[in-house]
Image 1 (cartoon, rainbow, N blue to C red):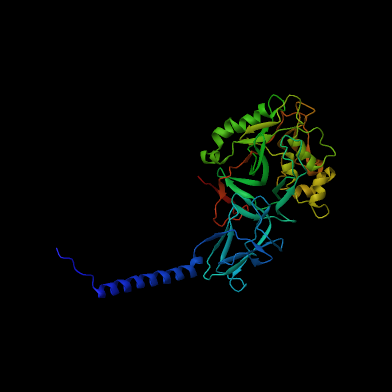
Image 2: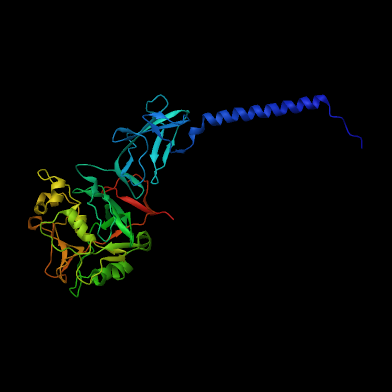
Length: 411
């Protein structure tokens, strides 16, 4: 077969086609480049004094407590993004079409951009991610408070640093959640032992109403590992019959609860209570930690839940036991129950029959007092820690009593 010679006009036609394709690709690339920001952007660029180090398409300026910073606060720093104050814009002004958010792993998300070289001013304030939802901390009134504990070196936690937690305080803060198709409330984001030598943070919740009055232990022995109420909550009728399977799946079962006792509840500051709960202060022969699912609140859970009153600040209330007798301080404590005494987890180390309970009468020391025998029946409020993959649904609920947060387990 005779081969046909490649004609010059074919060569020109091929060149035109190639040139046209290159032009289309270049134009498409420019269009995509200019409109890249209609998609979600994830970045971690840093700026120094508001000047961008890498002049690309999105620039961040980080402010912590309204002061410019070189770097963005990291996870666990106790700061969250103030989405109401943060903004982005090309000219430095707020473009309301651009939305900013911060994920729980501290990745900044920016969406809605239509122009390159957009600058975002990110303002960070005290707060914490509560079940995936960022909650700003307050310094007065009802809400989420930052709590810093004394150095716990030497305790069975032995973290060796000042522990920071976030706890809800006030008469009726927005800390309601629906759990087990019931009303429960968030105590806070607190430090817990997830192994015998590791401390992490978990969200702690407690039932809004008691499940009834029970003896702490029917044998009148204040060893939590053997207590009848412990068995009721973890292996008995309450756990087996009163909790749904979906609720059980949300409970973090790998928690080592501190069950140390207290030696004296007289002139003792609340931070000392916190340490005693975690130290080797238990009755001789008792265990100091217990691995389990459901227990009761600590005395300090109750103490950190108050906002004080008009004449007694929150700090004064937490620092001096005499203020614990103040009825107004009890009224400012959402864990206070004026109708009945409630049991706590902590026993008195000096006796085998004495465990701390919270009186229902503030005038009669609405703080904590020992009992004359744990065979007595008092209110039981189940308390537990949630798994880290339990999150609050983004459904517009605000955590109030009428609009409690709804939970979901992310598998």
